[in-house]
Length: 196
Image (cartoon, rainbow, N blue to C red; front, side, top):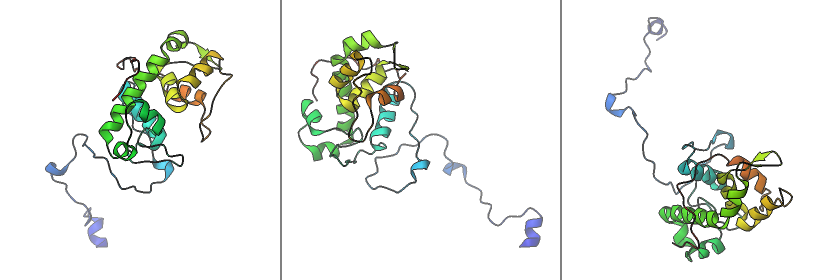
């Protein structure tokens, strides 16, 4: 074998047929079983700087994009909704919600429309300004509302960052405003009291 390898022959070289080569992205279904992967190896998907990119980046932060996740405080799904928020939008069955990725996507979009309505005046007033060195954008405001609620985001903005609420894991409003800034989510209209 040593002699053959000296002539450029490798017994491990395999030719892959053209029909088996991947030439374009493939669709992946939602896996229910989890695999253990080192945290350092995980990177959020990049899906652009529009609404799809925004929701996928936020989902990665919330649950690593796992539709079936339940955190230690009982928040559910890919976007980590609590039952009180789900009930506001007309979802009353937590297991039905958890087992339905399409419903989770719809609830997320409806919740963004709802928060956009609640925060519409603050978005108009604060977008483009800086609070404590952080540029305020519409996507940052709406991500922070997903984290801490629209009322807490209003307080943060109107107090110029003095009232910076944290979630139970220690993440604050300013962090989400900064991390999720710059996405174009103008495709989502503000809706008063939307429901599923």
